[in-house]
Length: 360
Ligand SMILES: [Ca+2]
Image 1 (spheres, rainbow, N blue to C red):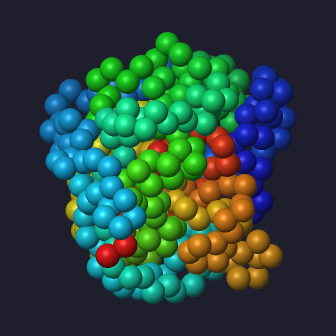
Image 2: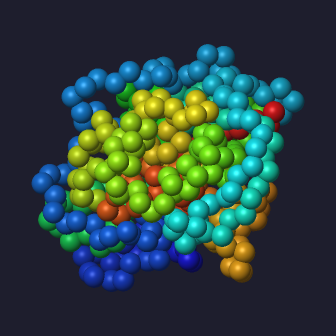
């Protein structure tokens, strides 16, 4: 699969307007639709980040700041909020998934620690207060925002992504949005360079794709991992389990998210059940950036084949993992550990964040 990237998708969406132009080959997080998105929608989605279900949820990190959080260094990294992941072996990707997931090899991994939660707005704000850091979206003045089309209106593929002036991490949906009440939501509208600057402040790094995928499996056996990766993600049983463990999209994408899992848009970190390593929201909520450059599929016969770890530092896009609150059974079955998409260098979006690692 060749990826045209979200930036091009944004341009195409703007140019296509209400035409029926052919869709771009891919866009961040939403490529290769499993089935056409249903056009039937009863009502527009509520504001992102809202609680959709009547039952209140107790979330693990209400303040958004783990105890002991603060600056660190490469020699003495800050370890607040990290969980240990043991050494082991990973069979990268899945031959049962999308094309870009296939053909991965087996990789040995040393022990490491990884954030139990996605990096929150409170954590990123602490970093910005301490360093005066200005994100790429703040410098360029715009970033990509998901805007659901009006029910019943024509929605050319990817037209729901718009480059919005004034959208940045403090204003994730645009200049009139804010972080009020979202200290413990994952930070979004950050580029890979922004994420790496935050990680360095703590004395940490972004995870490699292999580290991320291994952590997301949470100690599953190979057989369990293969079953979870089968493109059978639309079975009723899979969806029932998914609602306990991941913030995704229910209802016809892209018009209406019913919020049947409790949340529309981002959810506070830690509201969904942890995996076997004590890690929350590895799947869903927001896509998570890795330090690996995107160069194509895992397949060894692909001239753009991805190399394990430390790969393609000059790549124009980075691998991101895990799917987001926008992943739906009828369009993007990417709520699985092996799922992967590119995010172009310098671009930030309303559905991508990150977490960090430290080598043991
Ligand atoms: Ca949801």
